[in-house]
Amino acid sequence: MKNAVEIPAASRALLALGSNLAHHGQHPKETVLLAVALLEQRLGRALRVSGLYRTPAFPAGSGPEFVNAAAELWWEDTPEALLALLHEVEAAMGRTRRQRWEARIMDIDLIALGAQVLPDAQTQRHWQSLAPDQAARQTPDRLILPHPRLAERSFVLVPLADIAPDWFHPVTGLSVAQMLAARPPAERAEVVPFDAAP
Image (cartoon, rainbow, N blue to C red; front, top):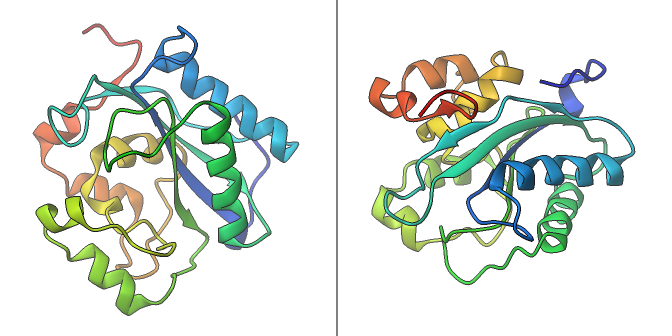
């Protein structure tokens, strides 16, 4: 885990990174590390980065296993500007968007920016409450913050707990640590440190 300067709460951006396809012949682990390096280069400062984890593809059976990580950075511009930067880095690495939840070279999700709720709490709750089959078919037409499926995904919460266990969801009031503790033990156990023996 890299250390960086303490980030003011209002400027604390949380990211989830994942890869399950090779980039120029490199293992997805190297792809995630390259994405971190590209972000640091474009930002001109270091990110605070979690450990790397091996996780099953989501949804189950949709491709090879992922390498996932989380990162924290200081961001003082708009959430939309940060999302544009993340999409730039994905595109630079060859990311395409043909269908939802496809295998991908690089996926960088903006999970949260401070305590911002976008576009509003009602919309946030609507997307949080969608049944899984509806969530698989519907895509928001705008940025939703915090990420509406955050509390359901151990592959995001486990790495995030490395670097931001104390971040509180501004709508539910739950911390990352509390959201992770609420996930089924079997699901949490599927998220394995990358260097652990298989």
